[in-house]
Length: 306
Image (cartoon, rainbow, N blue to C red; front, side):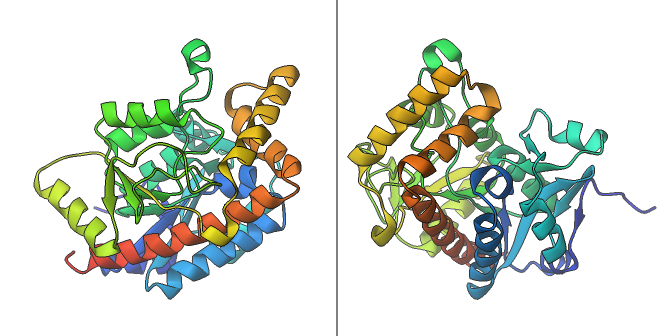
């Protein structure tokens, strides 16, 4: 009896998973909500090319007309890059989009769910969600943190988005038992900046070391994901103090305009783009590319003993 999978994957991704070749999952919210067109399309294509250069297969994930797709083809990616009404999907509404035939982009949490369903253990993104500033009264905490605690996927990022409360985000991750690794650094990176003022709980310097750590966790039946924090390249990094000033202005603007819920992060990223005169976007693209490069290497290292 044939089994109907809850997703469909491209021929390239299907073949790679069946033959146990390295695959790297990629989110799609960065395409629909994180960057303007055509930079979003160009970034997505370039990131996939970078992963292939490392010897791994890229799998960009999204929901298209109610179908969870693992590995968008060029036509699907181009169409998503120009979609203006795509839902921003997390754990709470991923199944809703599937059930109602909607199109939606996957956040970190939703991408982790889909990657785990497909058997993909490594995922590259820009920055994770976390505890929002003022969460002591708003209780605005991203579902990404809970997903990292429960879903066994390695997430490579440049830290949590700097618009968040990084200290509280780190505390929540510690409470939930999520390993946070500084890649080649003893300090937690802060998305657009290489410094946050916070120590990285753990440090590893190579993809092979990260793969060995994940294998050890699996052998001990320790569930959940792993966060690898990879600093933005030095030549595109923005000074921490300057970024903080832009963030304070963006947060003030959001409060004045009554922005809340899922609209907060896209609004703040857009304001950062304008306040920084485009420098935040250049840094964002550079860090996503660096994370894709590292994720590809980790996937290759993981596949050596698969």
